[in-house]
Length: 94
Ligand code: SF4
Image (cartoon, rainbow, N blue to C red; front, top):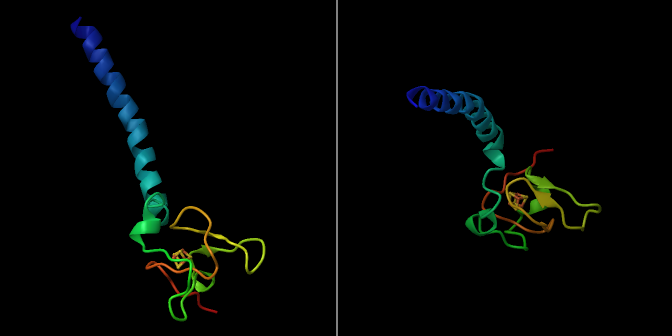
C-alpha cells in the first residue's frame, strides 16, 4: 500500500516536471496574446478612430483582404475594423 502511494506520487512529480516547463514556455510566448478573451472590453475597443490613431496604423493590427476590410488584432479577438481603436494602440513607424 505504502509502495503504491509512493509510485503515484513519483508519477505525479514526473508529470509536473514535464508540464510545468511547457506552461512556462506558453506564458512567455503568450505575452502579447494571453488576454484575448476579455480584452475588447478591457482595452475599450471602439470601431471608430481616436483622433489620428486607428487600427491600420497600429503595430498590433493584422490587415484583412483589402485595405477597408476588417482584419484581426494580436491582443483582441474577433474582427477588427481598420478604422477602430483601443487603449493598446501602438503607432506603426514607417
Ligand atoms: Fe486596433 Fe487596439 Fe488592436 Fe491596435 S491593439 S490593432 S488599436 S484594436
